[in-house]
Length: 462
Image (cartoon, rainbow, N blue to C red; front, side, top):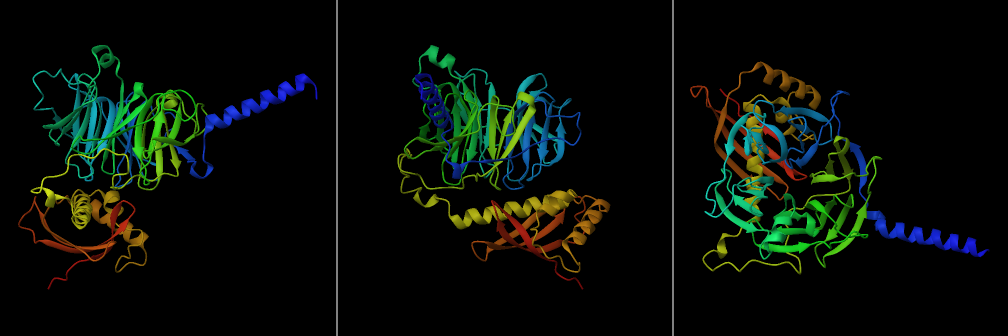
């Protein structure tokens, strides 16, 4: 072989080694590209999806379409369901979060200023949420991202003006804070760039983009560790904009500068693998902005270029997990508070109760698809030959009935096993309290991250 041929072979081998190093992929862990979310009308595309979130209970995917002033909602299979248009009420939504009951929290322009607003599950405006209890020295907040606790009782708000993560209740009353620029001089604080805040399991994750870091906290703001390795080489975090936790407790990170998806182990703070990369082919990325994991094991990544939101299979979101070696723990609780730890059975009952109340609201408001979604596909309806016939009958019944605006003052949940629960409830029509009470007994089974109705009993009346 000539010296030129030898050099060519060495050069080719060198390029191959570089490519292998840059991909850093563990084939068995590689996420599989599934689809790109799209709207049913060809001329109506997603404008600029600055934020993406998932409803772990309903399986819906919510996209903040900043350019076209709307929130888009897709089902668990990535099929378009409906949109919540802005315009007169809000515009330029940049981030969205949803609680277990289906209420939406949106960062958007509202009445000529940037605001946090709450919408109901039909997209109707409820109210503006203003921060209260700010320290006297605080600047006027500039909120850039938000997340909500699984219980729906606490909001986590990123404030670029004060470089702070605010911990508030649902009404914006501040209950705690984290100074993300603590220890930095004025120049460094001025240059700090924050990405998104997200909640998975029992962790709050904040991307500090220009430091190549994902910082994690518990729900009270205690530091639980910082992860990432700043750099532009393979398996480095150059400019992470968002992160999630998978079921194994590892981080899933989207990096806007390297245009890559990374899996990152918290234990040992090390890169496990990275996937895809820059490009406009299906699955590849161009300046990704946000990501979200759903209960079915799908990862959704949004990017402004071409209005893309892409779905990948091969991930599962974290449930509540035990602290791993190397994580920072908060101070031990005092003896007086030691008995206040959450009981797993209590948490399960609360999850069942949320599912039942969500079902009752859908029934009350005649939202047939949400009502049917509360039932398992294994639900065997009485007096019907098939689930399909029963579903058609329920849609027709709900369409023709008047909204009852129901209250559920009595609800009792009993756990029959770790996977089965029984709920007994009484429904009172608020709009017509003179109407007889309606009672139900529901049997629910755990399915994925939620609970579904597998049997429904209606007491016979004389």
